[in-house]
Every structure is written in structure tokens, then in C-alpha cells.
Image (cartoon, rainbow, N blue to C red; front, side, top):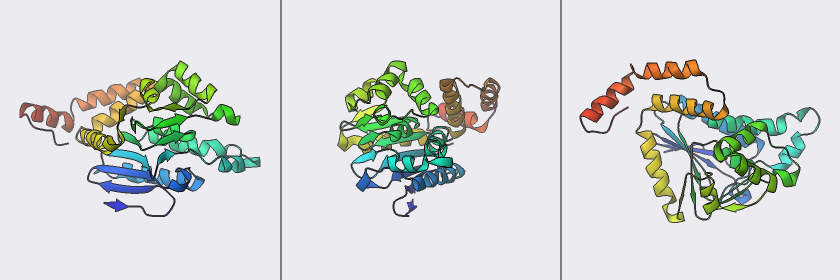
Length: 259
């Protein structure tokens, strides 16, 4: 296991085919600072460039996943010429995570608040404990949320749930998060790592090129921005690629495929 060990910024650990990014400001409920955003972008690039890595787990240190982006930083960066950088820097990170080539799991070890609700929503899967809770306080703060975040809420959770969460700023618990589709899976606290391990192992064993292409197509469908030619080309290429040959051979031989 290798760690990116600069204090305060997110930590990267790799074990076999799995990368884990851990938000690392537990005293402040892993509130994200401007330097964390830069670090996350670099870590995403590093993970994507390593062909041995097949799945990413994103989680937090301590008792919460994340309290979101530091409001003080937003206020400071919103002055004068930096007005466009306050929310956009965070938006870039979330969109980059959503488009990451690897499948992604958010391990929700506790509460998820503000902008970090969108960070988690950008992951492909969200596994949380029964003690999880979330709220989106934009309406209480007088903040109109950035459009790609609102689109993610609408496409993932539906119009009615997006309106409820954004316009009421209501706090909801894990059972309701599961009901509206925010959580993929809810487990007892003691089973969180077991369920994350199960899903990460499953994803890491599947065909990476096929998964990458299908993830991109699914995300494009969700955004209403499908590149039909590219999706068709990925489908055709897969029919002649090495992955499908191994998949069919493994199926015939009744063994797990080795991609």
C-alpha cells in the first residue's frame, strides 16, 4: 500500500487494483479547501494513468464524509475578478470525478453536506451506513447552485427530489437517502467495509475497456448529450476486441475472466 501523505490534503492509497482517496480534515468534518481541489485533480490524473488500477473508492476520515466546500473560501474568492472561480473550481473537480474512466464507489462513513453531496453523487455507487445523513443548504445561504450540480441531482434523483433537497434545505437520514436513490446501498456501520470490499472486488474483475465505454455512454444519456457515433463505435470495437474473446473463453471454461 502506498500513501500520498501530505497533511490536510486528500490521501491516496493503492492496494492491488483498488485506489482509495480519503478526505483528510477530520477536525473540520473534511471540509474541502482550495488546495484540496487541486490535489484531487492531480490524484484523479494519477489514478487514471495507472493501468493496474481498476476501481476508485472515495471516503472520508473520522465521523463524517465531508461538510462540503469551505464557505469562507467561497466568500473570499467571490470578490472582484475572482467571482467566477469561487464555485467553478469545485464544479471542475466534481465533473472530473463523474467522468473518471474507472468505476467509482463513494464510501459514506458519515454525514454528507453541501457541495460534498454532489461530489458523492458524481460517483457511480454510494454505500452508506444507517447513521448517514445529508442536506443541501444552498437556499438557506442565498446561493444558486452551479448548473451541472443541479443537472446531476435531477438526472440521478428526479425533479421532485431535486426540488425538495435544494429548495427546502431539509436534512434527511439514511433510510430516506436510500428511498430516493441517493444511496445505492445502506448497511449497518459494522458492515460498511465488507460491502465496499464486495463491490470493489466485483468491479475490479470486470472488463475495464467495456466498463469505461458503457459508463461514458450512460453519463452522456443522463446529461442528454449522447455522442451516438462514438457510442456505436465503442460497441463495434468491443465485438472484435481482446476483452470479449477472453470473456467468451472464460464463460465456456467456467472460470472467472482475466482482463
